[in-house]
Amino acid sequence: MASMSRTDNAGGPAHGLTTRWASALSDTPAFWKIVSLAILFGAWEFAGRIDFNYAFPGFLETMAALFEMLTDGSMAKAYLRTFEPLAIGLVISLTVGISAGVGMGLRRDVEWLSLPIFITMQAAPMAALIPLVTFVYGIGLASKVLAVVMLSLPVIAINSYKAVRNVPPSLVDMSRSFMGSRRQQILGIILPAASPMMFAGIRLGVAEGFSGAVLAELLITPTGIGDLITFNRSVAKFAHMYAAIFSIVALAVIAVSLLHRLEMTLFRPEKRGV
Amino acid sequence: MTMERRSFMRAAAGALTTTVALSGAPALAQDEPLQVALGDIASVESLNLLIAMERAGERGVPMEMTFFNSEDVAVQAVLSGEVDIGVGAPYAFIQNSDAPIRMFYRMSTLMFFPVVNSDVYSGWEDLDGEEVTVHSRGSGTEALMRLMEQKHGIEYSQISYVPGSEVRAGAMLQGTVNATIVDAANFRLLQQEGGDKFQRLPLEGVNATDEALYATTDVMEARAEDMQIFVEELLGTWADIAENPEIVGELRAEYGLLQDLPDNVASEAVPYYAEAVENGVYPTDGGEPSDVADDIAFLAAAGQVSGDPEEIDPERFWNFDLLEAAKAAN
Image (tube, rainbow over all chains, first blue to last red; front, side, top):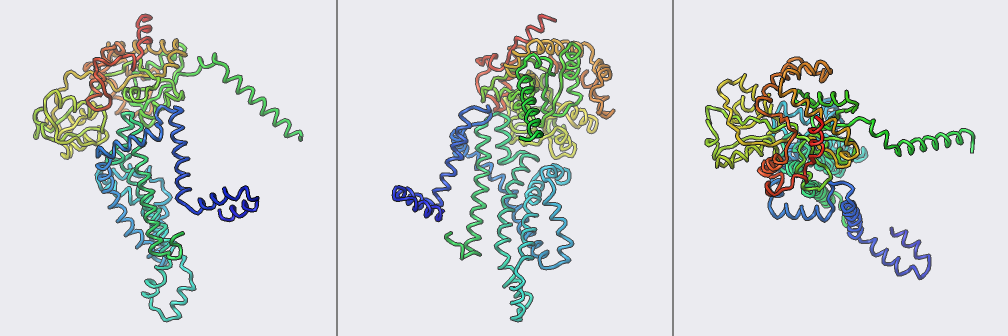
């Protein structure tokens, strides 16, 4: 962006003011984010107003429905239900996924034993498998937790494995030449070096976990946010249905962004403030 | 421009002209089959509709059935013109979206069986302050249970949602659920497996449907003749089945309908229709304006639609012209 402004400056003094403005704005990422959102929501509102589909409400109508659901408490009640399997599933995925990933990265035998399972889990179309889970685990909390785990675990495990495996060998060699023990090598060199990529995997895994929670609520039994979506669809309250979908997307984006910030604060001091 | 390119351009131009000519020929539309969208898979319960479709085909109105994942998707397909006729009761959709679709034939009235474990409960009054299990929020089963709650002056402590009659019947057999509502097939299953243990609670004064045929007003106008023939055949088939339910089995064999059904399921067809006819599930009049008020009252109990059933204009949801014309012709 900066280089573009410089080129424009060469165009003459008439462009000076606008380019200075553009340059100032380009240094304000928040501005561009707002513009991007405004274009998206504007297009949404436009599409809603031209009535291309009877079941497609505009942005403002959807936001009014969202406000109504937030104030009457129905959304808070729904999220309390949805967060239960999501939180339990994510805790299991993070614990098992990171341990398995690190294990696979450090030891070949663990890799041979576990990696095919995670690759199969990642490749399989989970939406088709989730209904099968109910045959074994019924329609209660266990099935929904499993749906979250099935979607988020493989991403977390495979990314952790790749992160550990791709630690620069020179760092490990350095540790060895300083007579570092295996324990020091793992805790002091491998894990810190692998953590940025592991965190990227965790971010993806959390996003997948949200998908798993919603899929479970749409495919197993309608509870929580899945119930808000199916119920409002069945009674043709489309603004409320879109508001429920909007809320879960927004929440997933916020969760992933917060994780990104945490990652920056913890592991990437050199990137802070960028 | 090389020879190959020129001939390609000519071919493309030719194809374009043909497409334009075809799309501008409304006469052809009359020969296209009338597509019926079912928001479910076909079962023995769809046999009467399939028979009427075959009979319409014999009178020069070819018809095809398409299956969708849910009724919501079927409504969208009807609205977008991908199919002509839908099966369902899109009252809420019409009320909330003002879409130009209207129902034109009432296929059935709801047949569900509220069942309780007789060791625990013996009547509606016992369900006061107790938990009941239904299909899903806003479903017909919930509406029925809510309506009974009002009629009997009771209040459930909680309504749980377990989709699938077979799942709820299974839960009754396991003893994890003591009061629920199931369909005819699963009520029979409960009777076979549990005998007197499962007691059916009376459902009186409920006249509502979740199975009507609907189409856009455009299709009803553009294909009025074809649609009328179809409605005539619906009325005829329903009347024939009401007179003798056994013809369902004969006509299934004659037209080769649902041949993939396993024998044990197919053999359920005639008993099912016999029982349904006995219970008045399949009305032979195709629906009356007064039924619309009953439907609205029923759906309002489940929170699907709003408004006073007595004040609602039936024309907003229904078009009775086809039905009246078909009755006159029959």
